Image (cartoon, rainbow, N blue to C red; front, side, top):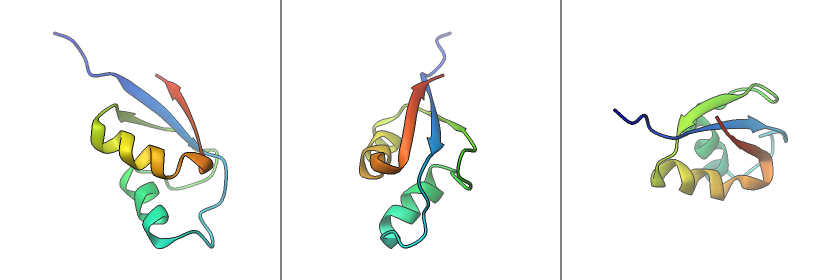
Length: 62
């Protein structure tokens, strides 16, 4: 079995004052707090949300 590729996301800028759609992207990815890493599966849907809020994130392969 091959496991799906994982990405480690860390929020490095605040969600305060951001567009609602950007805040919802962060929530959809499971991001809650700054500097609290989360792991997500590398899917096209997740990639789209990551690209939209890339200015607030650091992304690493997990």
